[in-house]
Image (tube, rainbow, N blue to C red; front, top):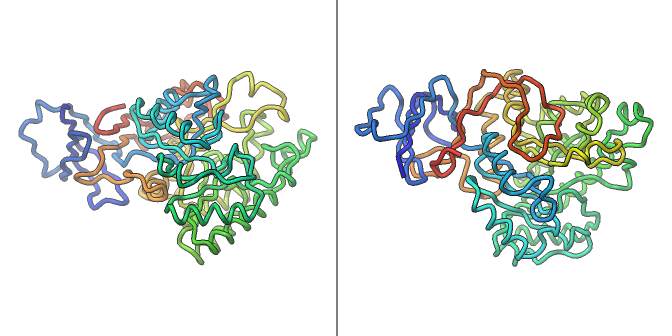
Length: 424
């Protein structure tokens, strides 16, 4: 394999020991050498593949612990190959698939299928398995068997688990296996037409919506169970200010509490549903400006330690249905970094180092993935991007185009994604 030399880039490396303007030599899938650019001298440079990263940021490859690749069973929306291409285009070198495929990932045979197909892509594709059989919330899967077969964590994402004792037992199993368990927090009893906030948006369309209490009550329950069991849990796609505050208080009581925010929840409010209709419909829904500000504050103070896309592709035909009938969700892998740079770094909410911590280091740490750091001997998984260059969102590698961000000009343009030392 030809050596790859990255020259004159600004290394942003929150978990590493080296920072600033560096030259980085990659070979055999690992980082071979990191040298301050002013001191760098490589004898056989003319035989290397060279990337001039002047005025560009070099960071650990992004890690997304919440993607839907719709494979098996729903591959007209997306598949593992196209989803991985979208991830690579967005700067991601590691992704964790959700288990709500068709069939769902509650058997080792289905898990093996997705992991084996993931190995044919240019990036690292991991997968969660279901917490409950068929995601029905009635009976636990064989978590030990699924973990042994390669599950990186467990979730019934897309469905809340209403049985409290089942959740407690699942958490106890997750502790024993030392894996994270992630929760979709929406009580269906408090939702009439999911994907639309019960407030200005639902009133505008003269429909019922999703009450904020649907999220709040479930978060409160699962945080308490996690503190009792010691489980490492992730509150997924948090949308309410009360939910953020519950996580903030729980983190003071236990170190295994984690929460993720999506780029759409920190970038938009329910007003976007009024403007973009089904393209801005997602579960949990976009809520108010107060909620968005609380999410920003949570990201800033570390209450929310992860940024995850909840990449949720759907066909144009599905999203063309009436608002109450169209599926929830938007694609996110190719817009996440630009939205984060534009709406978090350029507004002063986060420093660039904090952003890379939320988008690479912390997700890798939660899922025990060999990612999130650029060090000699570590995996050669990197993203090289411009902080200030802008691009118009569109022309996606994903099969799907369901996002309200198409056509927006955003800063933060990926120039190279490198995985296992290869430009992907």
